[in-house]
Image 1 (spheres, each protein chain N blue to C red):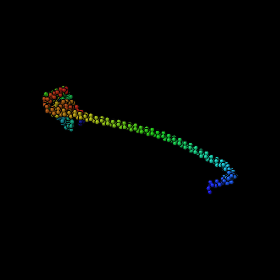
Image 2 (tube, chains in turn blue, purple):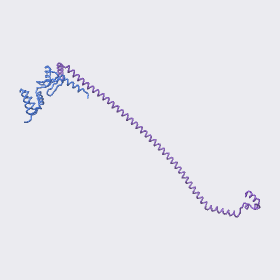
Image 3 (cartoon, rainbow over the protein chains, first blue to last red):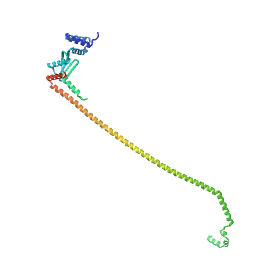
Image 4 (cartoon, one colour):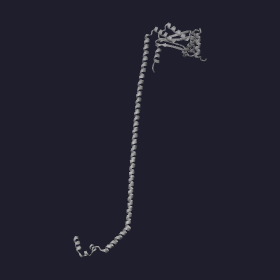
Length: 132
Length: 181
């Protein structure tokens, strides 16, 4: 059997997820396929591709990293921001608490990233204004 | 015998009044013979000895004149040689003076060149030292700047860590989202 390309797998899974198919069933199929074909190492790349195709289809998923726990109001504001920027109809965000960012927010969605954290600002301060 | 007495006795004798030649002991025939012999001698001398003698004298005179001429020429030659020597000495002195002048000029030029090189080297060393000092100052300024920057970042980090609460963080996020639109 010819080896399926990562793109073909991601496209198939994205189509299945956007259709009314049970998403849990689709994910299980994907996992089984990767285990069977011994391609589990490609999982993260395939997930990234799936997210990319889903975002093109109007369903954006991403990760929001903050120093403190997001309030509901802030989360809504972020979702609204993503919709405005990408034209997505649905936004699914995973929250990640990372005290090292100090403050602000880092939004990672397929194809783009917004890093408005204090740690990044300080890194910029350290690097951009540093004299060599 | 006393000669004075002898002559006095003979002057008073009768033979003295007989003739002067007898008184003097001169015999005329012997005198004539002596004159003839003398003339023959003069003739022989004039014929054979005198010409030879004159020839020898002439030759000697010629030799003396030649020697004198040679001496004069030698003297002239010596004078000329002396003049030549003097001229050569003057020329040698002039050349020596020229060489000394040239040596002095070259020494002066070498001294000037050495001074110029020394001055140039000194200026170069001073310029390098100045450049090093400026570079050190610039490095110190840069290090101070970077350390200040690092201190500011660390201080900001500490302050924000202690001061940032959920409300402030939410406001910060809202502001960031607004700015990035």
